[in-house]
Image: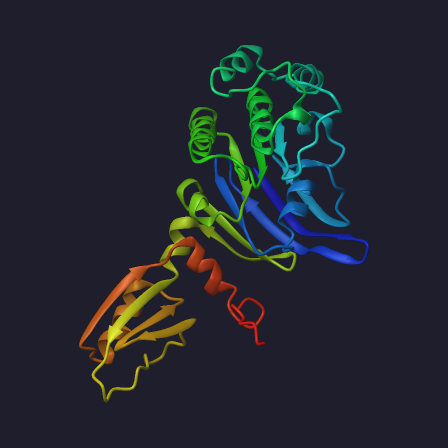
Amino acid sequence: MIRIQNLSKGYEGVQALNDLSLHVPRGAVYGLVGPNGAGKSTLLRCLSGVSEPDSGTVLIDGQPVWENAPLKSRIAYIPDDLYYFTSANLMDMKKFYQGFFPTFDEALFKKLGDIFPIDPKRPIRHLSKGMQKQAAFWLNLALQPDLFLLDEPVDGLDPVMRRQLWSLIMTEVERRQVTVVISSHNLRELEDVCDHVGVIDHGTVLLERTLSQLQEDFVKVQLVFPPDREPVLPGITPLHHSCTGRVHTFVLKCGAQAAEQAALAVSPVFYDILPLTLEEIFIYELGGADYAVKELVL
């Protein structure tokens, strides 16, 4: 579905994307994970055809997206910073969208009105941030797109509406094999909905895996050593090591079987092997001086 090769993009001397390559299969729900300023939003703008790459290729179904109106009519893009015409209400924006998206479904638009508690004749700029986000989903779901690009899609929404929107998106994935690319800092929610994950930092992709593969590559090992035993695992350099009393916790970049073999080799009093959450994987994969939690020295 999406194939990006050696993509670079800069703004006013800042290199937002640097030789980035990425692949998203059709029907995938792909989570973009990375720190602030990693280039996630710039990547989505290039994918949507809003921004022109400086170099590299952005292909959707084998076609370049830049200045390709027929292809862009199959893409729904909800940015973090929403834009609506001044004084426009939802019905005004509906007419605007209908002029550019031939797949706009009038019947679906009316059905979605039962889900979103918005007065369609009220100026959108008078709505709260959360209600404006709901208006964006109302319009974009009615487009019946083949590709959803979502930048912090549920930011500012209450828990009930967040759950409702994820349900609507996942229904579209199941019903029409829609491809979804999501940039979000809410890694707990991404873990619930994504089946593929790409970790981005400094404008390039550090790794991309299916979520199950990513979770198989990292494990947490907890061991209890006798008081006179050195807490060292042979042959493995831990990404992180902490200690609470006699319980030592190691975060390892390896499979569960290799971790268990290393644990058994040191004959602990007790050991346990636990999976990592996506948030923990993100923290430890980007570990080091740049991302360590720092204390304020007064």
